Structure formats: structure tokens, C-alpha cells
Image 1 (cartoon, rainbow, N blue to C red):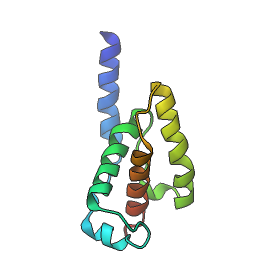
Image 2 (image 1 turned 30 degrees about the vertical axis):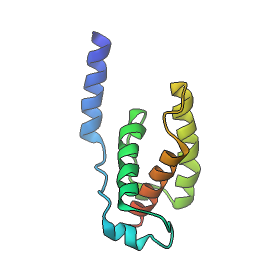
Image 3 (image 1 turned 60 degrees about the horizontal axis):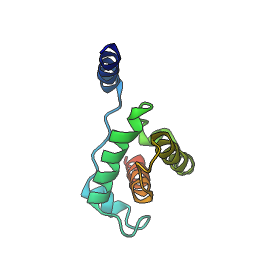
Image 4 (image 1 turned 180 degrees about the horizontal axis):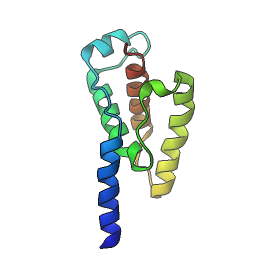
Length: 111
């Protein structure tokens, strides 16, 4: 019972201190068609949702502009592998990894 209370309190604390991610827009899609030819608003929305619901389980959510594109490309794949290994099964697919990366890279460029 105490363990459950600690988890709940931790979640409340983290939710208060977590960065609020920007919502993707159709304008984001249009601006990034040259970078991701098959990008859709739904892709970006799913990427945001996956990032929010998975990445903050182990650490705070980082602002997309906190790292360079090259850094994100180096960090996200190993983190997905780590999540899957920790879970003992594939929690995040290659497609979901791609959606997270697209969301981060698109929002990162928003001015």
C-alpha cells in the first residue's frame, strides 16, 4: 500500500514539474514536407502522445529544442531499445520510434 502511495505522489510531483509539450499543427506539417515527405498531422499527434506517455515514465520530458537534431537521432533509438528491454517485450515499435522522432524534430524547429 505504501509503495502505491509513493508512486502516486511521485506521478503528481512529476506532472507538476514536467514541461508542457507543444501541440502539432497543420502548419508544422506543411513546413516539414520537404524533410518528411509523407508526414501527416496525425503522425505528429501520435508522436507527441507516445513521447508523453512513455518517455516520462523514467525521466522528465525534455523540450524538443534542448538537443540538436543529431543528438535526438542518437538518443531516441537506444532509449526505445532500453524501454523494450526493461519491459521484457516490444513496448515501442520501430514505427512508434519514428513517430516520436518526427514529432520532436518538427516541434524543435518551430519558432
